[in-house]
Image 1 (cartoon, protein in one colour):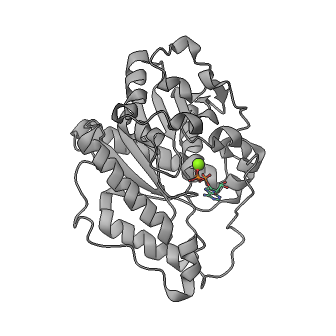
Image 2 (cartoon, rainbow, N blue to C red):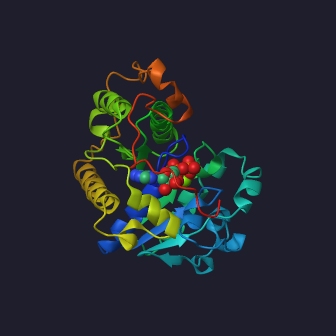
Image 3 (tube, helix red, strand yellow):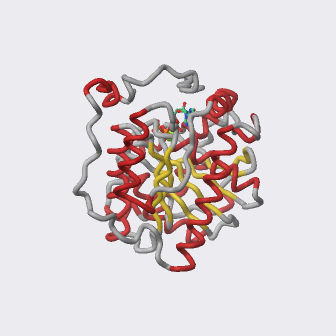
Length: 306
Ligand SMILES: Nc1ncnc2c1ncn2[C@@H]1O[C@H](COP(=O)(O)OP(=O)(O)OP(=O)(O)O)[C@@H](O)[C@H]1O
Ligand SMILES: [Mg+2]
């Protein structure tokens, strides 16, 4: 079973969109996929219009030592199964404060031995007991990166957190992969940060990228995947290609036992992401490219139901 966490400590970098579309692409290729929505805000579940279940049928059940596979009632959406989040996750977090509370997910997944080829975690933009559970349970970490200042800083921190988890808690964690998302080739700042990441992290950065795509935003508004919305659209092609490449990376790492993800990038942690130029100062607040031409492709839709 492939177990993978989709993480970035920075918000809005495309984690949920990536989790949904990697899961959907894997489902289309015949894999049995389970997505666990570990973001207490439950945007993945909401994006796909899946109602919030009772806490005991939600992803929270994985934090119960007595849980039983029969208690799980995954919802089938767009070719994969989903166990939604619950707003109770936030309340319950206060009680999950023992060091061993980061182990629940791994223990229960191992014990239940669920009939899936792939388990994917969507996580919140923070280091919480839930995102740590995802990292401790995973063999692979996919880090969607928006190539702007804050997105890159968050991605680098996530990369380090995943390595810390590998060294201290989860020696089975094999690969860490950056996936560039929401890339707009017309934005100079995106080129700058892509170059910085590829120079510093080399093979840890996946080939290709997810470009900004109105089709992804439209699909989001409709509560379905881009494959259901328009399977020929740019967003569908990008995620299908990225998923193929990701599977190939996993296969290579498993075969060689030498995952991109077991060594530190070279030189380690000496280089910092380039500061955005003065004229692009808004990028520090998440809107990079003050100098860049306006573009119709940049779509920041309202999030449905949030
Ligand atoms: N490639 C893309 N092209 C256009 N819009 C996109 C793309 N990827 C994501 N978006 C949009 O950007 C917004 C943020 O994406 P998403 O929710 O996936 O990020 P996130 O990292 O999960 O955010 P959070 O940290 O809040 O959970 C969403 O409205 C989504 O539809
Ligand atoms: Mg999200």
